[in-house]
Structure formats: C-alpha cells, structure tokens
Length: 254
Image (cartoon, rainbow, N blue to C red; front, top):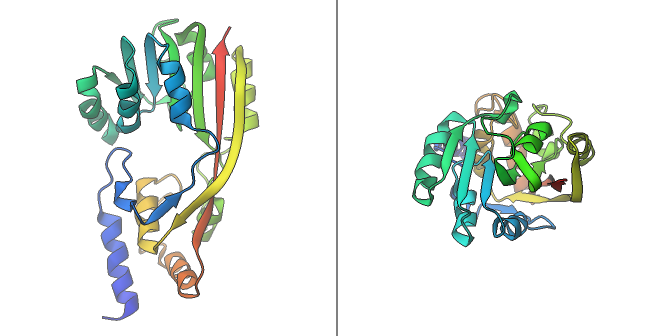
C-alpha cells in the first residue's frame, strides 16, 4: 500500500471516530493547547464558593461543570445545553451532582426558561448569550463570567480549507458593548492569543469533525487536497501550528 493510500485510510478512520460530549481525550499527546493567560476555572471557583444558585450555560457534556462542582456545590445548580447529542450526555454526567440540565439553545436569543433574579452566578464558557436575558435572571450583585472564542480563532487553519467562519463579530469590543448596554458593570476583561499544535494530520481530521462549525461540510474526500498540503508541511519539517484567540469578561449586576 502506498503512503498516500495509507494516509487516506488513517484519515477516514479518524473521520469515523465518534466524538462525545466535549471530551477531546482522543487527541491526548497528539494536540498541544496553550493555556490562556487567565485561568477560567480558578475565577469560576472563586465565585462558585460564594454562590447559592448557579447556572452553567452551554455545559456541553457537563465534563467541565462537574469538575467545578466537586470543588464546591451551591444549593441550586442548573445547566443549559442546546446541542441535541450532548443533552443526554450532560444529564448522565451531572445527575449524581443534582444538576438539572435544561434543553435550551442560546443561539435562538429567545427568553431563557428561568425566573427573574433566579441566580446569583451565571457561568458561560464558549456559548452564545443574550446579555439582557442574563441580566434579567441574575439577582442584584450577581456575577456573570464568560469566556469566548474570538471569530478569528484558528483563522490560519481554516484558510487552508478555503472556508469562512460561520460566526462573525465575536470580539472583545463588541461583547463588552453588548454587556454594558444590558446595564452590567464590567469588572475585568482581557483578550489573548496562543498556540494550538497538532502532531499529525489525522488529529486535525478528528478535530474538524468534532467542531463542524469551523469548516462547514468538512470531509476527508471533499478536503483531501488541503489535508495533503498539511501533510507536505510535516514532510518538509514544518509544524502544524495555528493561532488560538480567546477573551473573557467578568461582569456584575448593580
């Protein structure tokens, strides 16, 4: 079997490998992700310890939220998740911790299924939100912590696949304006650039299948030339290194 055929077979195998929840352990030792200049979990824990009612927006499979709750579990804990395959996974992962998982997609920007001032802490890691709705469901003095993926995240990788970002205008400035307009007081905000490095092209195949919004319609057959371009980069001693972009905002309801 020629090298090209071997690679094609490997990439197709990665394409078929199932991705569950928000668990990238399949890429352990095959992908390096640089840590942000801030630690989202550490910031969340600080406020979680003082919270009596916490909402985690876009909990994925509940993997990250469950780890936070092992540090401290408020009396009331609720999570939302709008990606259908993840809802049942999140409910299974969070059931033992007493977390109610609500099937709700924040992309709809409709009214959230919660009462006014129902929570004192809202966590949001990489999920869409309506700042006015978050403000409504938070009590006075309540905290809103969000970390977001900038629209230009991994743009150097996406460019290779001749694709365009599905979500645009996700930047620190625009999100600060949105949060301020909802009457929040912004306590801290920062943006960051870092590196994501893949050790092999198959890892990129798996990653792009796991996050279909990065390269819509991605498939090995459809994007074979782009994958081969990346393989040639490795053959020449180059790196599969791309630029990550993140920002976070810590806001409080006055």
